[in-house]
Image (tube, rainbow, N blue to C red):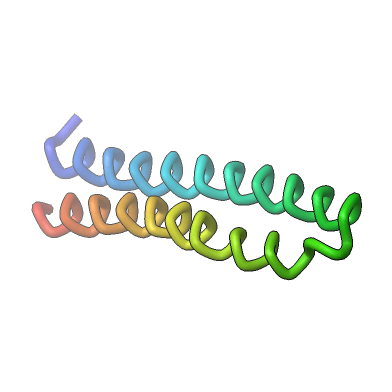
Amino acid sequence: MESTAIIALAAAIAVAVSVAFAAMAQGRFATAAMEAMGRQPEAAKDIRGSLLIPLALMEALAIYGMLVAILLVGKI
């Protein structure tokens, strides 16, 4: 395989893995938060507030994967 093909494949894998794991983590986290809100509706506001920061950090991981892919594609 040529080096450009290997770099392109690495970029695709970087995006796929980072986005897949970030999406799974966000789904599990949101599910747990919704279940907690269902059990204690009076605490929904606090749970929702606590939900935003971790979701933003998980999304940042996916963005870092995309950044790695962009840097790899820049080498082609």
